[in-house]
Image (tube, rainbow, N blue to C red; front, side, top):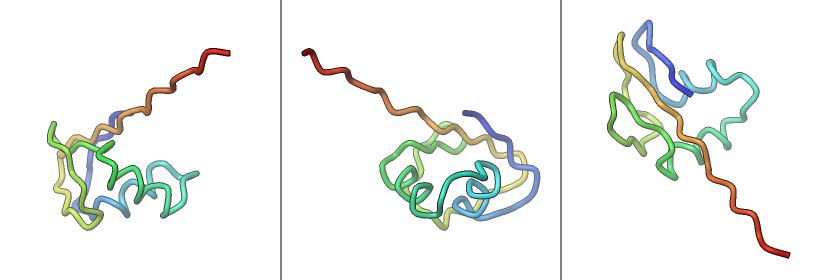
Amino acid sequence: MNLKVSDSSILIDFLIEKIGTASKTTVSKMIKTGRVEVNGRQVIKREFKLSKGDSIEIKKVARVERPE
């Protein structure tokens, strides 16, 4: 998922607003586990300050199927 920042914000607040269905805990885990990049750089601080024009990418978690 790719997002563009239109106004200055704090990373966790921005993601909660844009994702909508995710809880603060879920978004926090996404950030802390390195799934969020701002302008191509991994960010693990929830309070990271975003600026207008920043590009955010949320990486998907690969699912591994177990053989039966």
